[in-house]
Length: 190
Image (cartoon, rainbow, N blue to C red; front, side, top):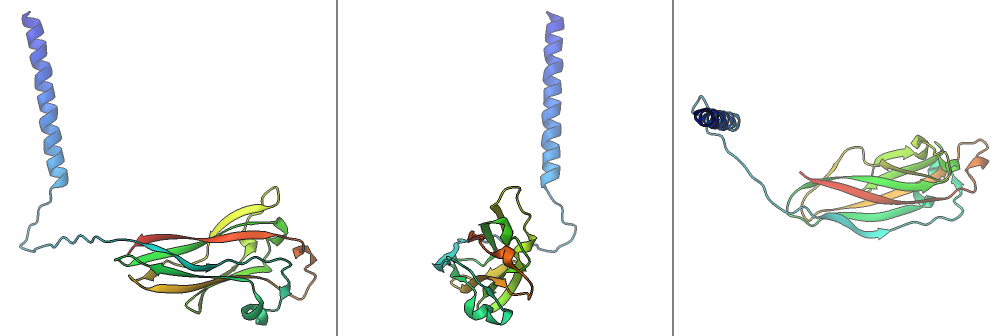
């Protein structure tokens, strides 16, 4: 009987020791000491992040023709949309293009451009997509170079356009292709 009581006493002592060490370690981990008289301010910002698309116009292209680089502004198919911050805090966002296209359109001659408030912010080609083993191929890629900051109640007018650019050589391989796509957005509080 005495041996059983001694064993219970040892177990209780070990448990108490573990609890004391855990609490001491937790206190040391989560406390901070300031050695000078400097006062540090803690700032907590709260608000609503409400960023979204408005006035979207999607493009459907049947029989896209190859155009010269000087004709892009007037002839390239485009999607126009607005990104509006209806929240109460600054936000930054990135835009992505999600597409499914036939493998013959995975070419450096198939180009895209993103304009924000009338200014070209990024251009690229569909030649950077890795073709799938079976056509069509699905892909998604970022069309903004860096996140765009938008203040509360502000709006960015955006245009995303695509075109087949004439490069003065036989581009018959670009014919008979199809592409569908949409723009998506990711946003974070700034």
